[in-house]
Length: 104
Picture 1: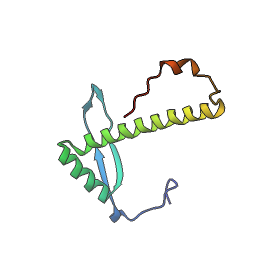
Picture 2 (picture 1 turned 135 degrees about the vertical axis):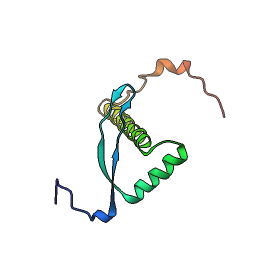
Picture 3 (picture 1 turned 120 degrees about the vertical axis):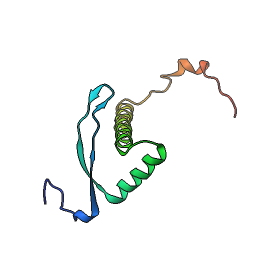
Picture 4 (picture 1 turned 45 degrees about the vertical axis):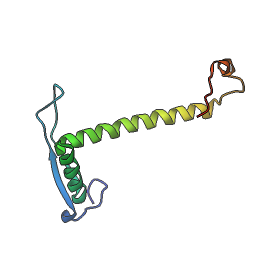
C-alpha cells in the first residue's frame, strides 16, 4: 500500500500526461494522472467528437467539476443558514402584493 491507496494491477490503468505550453496567457503545469483505461478511451472519443484534445477536454471537465463543487458549497451554506434561522411568518409579506401569478 502506498500513500493510503491500495496497489492496483498496472494492466487496469493507463497513465496519461496532460501538457500545454501556454493557456489563457499563463503557463500551465504538466500533470501525470493514472486513469482507468475505459475512461481514457471514452474521453478520447468524446474529445474527438467535440473537435478538441484530451487535454482541453479534461481542463474543461475539471473546471466544470470545480464550479459545481463551489455551487454545491454555496447551496449547503444557504440551506444551513435557513436551518439555523428559519423564515418567520409574514417576514416577506410586504412583497406579496408585488407578485404576479400567471396560470400556465
